[in-house]
Each structure stands twice: as C-alpha cells, then as structure tokens.
Length: 174
Image (cartoon, rainbow, N blue to C red; front, side, top):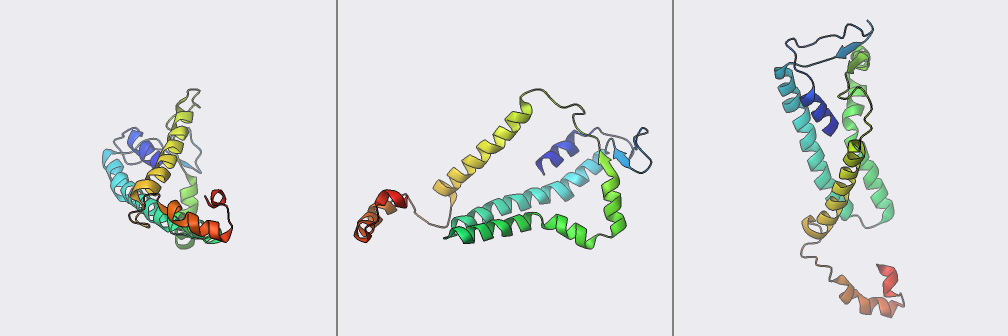
C-alpha cells in the first residue's frame, strides 16, 4: 500500500482519464498518468481503507500474537494473519470474472523511476522498515500491549523461588 500510495500521488497529472502509451503493444494498456479526480478517488476509496485495514491488523495481530502461549499456536496464528492479509487477492481471483482478471493483467503502470537507482535510497528505505518493525515490537511489548496490564518486567522475582524448587535453572527460563 505504501508503494501504491506514493506511485499514485506522484504519477503525472493528465487531462484525460486514460492515456495509452503509443509505443505499447496493442494487447496491453500502459497507464502514463491520472487525472486529479482519479488520484483523489484512488486515494480515498482504495488507499485509505487499505491503510486502515493494515493499521487494524498491525494492532490486533500484535495483540493476538502476544497472547499466544505456545510456539505451535503462534505459527498457526501467523498463518491465519497471512491469510487475512492476502484475502483481498483471493477474493479477486474467486469473484472477479476471468475476462476482468485478464484485463487487469494487461494493465501496466509506468514505473516512478524508469532506471534502477544506484543511490543509497533503496537500501535506506528497507532499513527504515527494519527500524520501524523493531521499534514497533519493542514499543508494543514494553508500552502499548493490553494483554498483560500493569506488566513492568517484575515476574522474575516472583517466579525465581518456584523455579529453584523445580530444579530448573532460572537463566534457562528467560
């Protein structure tokens, strides 16, 4: 959704709703620009709901995975979240008529940058997502999570005596 939003908003503005590239093949349509109204429509009707769904899935998936008690349940929950994320594509393949799917496959959008960039920006973008993911995990687990209210990392002192009685070294439980 992030790349789609940037691509839609940075796409050149045109006067007509669809301008075909003259150099493109007859069997394909290449979108070279969008009208301002179409950019607004795509942003409001497609991109904002996708962003809202992604934010809701980030929150509920984080809560769901935090509440998981076993590794096998966590794997099942991750598979279920992946299914929910891919549900729109599955619905399109199941519901849309075959000719609509074929038309969608023939529709191409000009890339934002026709030539591959040799700068550091693509790497910094990926690094930014890595920093965001690590920050989200840390902040959710330490601050935002509603699964264990009032959790302040104070369980070890309460459990240490019990774990010593079991004969399990405390260091292995962390």
